[in-house]
Structures are given as structure tokens and as C-alpha cells.
Image 1: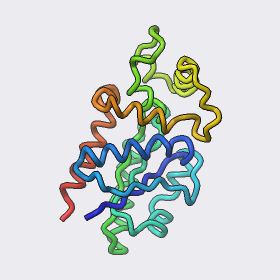
Image 2: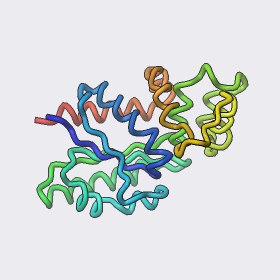
Image 3: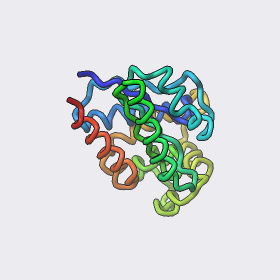
Image 4: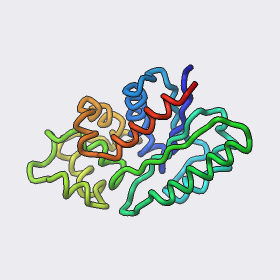
Length: 200
């Protein structure tokens, strides 16, 4: 069976272009390379609260034909796990009520989605940068990601996503290193693997 997966980002242009190739790789690693990954663009989200308010009703109204929903926002210095647990439980209950076998998995990028790009390119960082400091910086986008682009000497501003997709594809060539630096991705892969194994 080909899996239909919906990825809910905080922003489809910036975060979404990072998340699509990443999720394609995650499902490949989990034995489902043919999974169909759709980054939600309708309704268009703009930030965590805007995306969160779509659960469960709007997502189920529009996308109940999907098998799995991945909600992948920024961490932003907040422990989102209790809220994620409530969201997942409420979503599952509503899905049961409408007899749709759709699930949701939530995972926050620490501290922001751009960290997942940077984690795959350690050889291109400024030599003074330390991953622990970077990962703890809630403004990693401004303080590290944009300087990272400048350090490469490439003008990514001509692209709507400022080069995020291209850079994520490069980061995925160092997939093991990416997971090592971002343990939330190891956990996400484990949860996806368990979901895949549960499918009849």
C-alpha cells in the first residue's frame, strides 16, 4: 500500500521546502520509499498557533483521506510535548468518531527548522561555531543560518525559499550526522517506523 502523508508546517514556503525532502528520506529509511508526501499549502499556515488551530477539525475535514499527518513546527524554547500529547489524543478520538484510520505524529525542531539544515553541514560552519551553542540559540535562523548562507558566498535570495530545499538535500547526504545532532529526528523516525509496522 502506498502511504499518503500530510506534512503540516508553520510556513509552507520556508519550513515546507525543508520538510518535504526530509520526510521523503524518513519514509525511505522506514521502508516506504513510495510514500506520497504532501506539504499542506491549503489552508496556508503562518506560525505555530495558526497551524495548531487547524487540529483536529479542519485537518480531518480536508484531509481525512490521508493515512498519517506529521505536525512539524519549531520548538521555539517551549516544551511542546504535553500539548502534543493532548493534540494527538484528541485527533485520534475524532478520527475514530468519523471512522477514519488516520493518525497524527507531532515533533518540534530544536530550536527551529533551519537547525535541521545546519546539522547536516558541519564542515561548512564557521570554525568558531559550536553545535551545543547553536542548538540552544532560539534565534538560530538569524544568528547562524543566514551567516551560513553568506559564508558559502551564494545569493539564495533569488529563490522564494532562500535556498532551503537545496541545502536540505545536501544535508541529507549526512543523514546519520543529522540524526546524531538532532535527537528529536531519531525519535520521529522511530515513531514513523512503528506506525509503518502497525499498518495491516
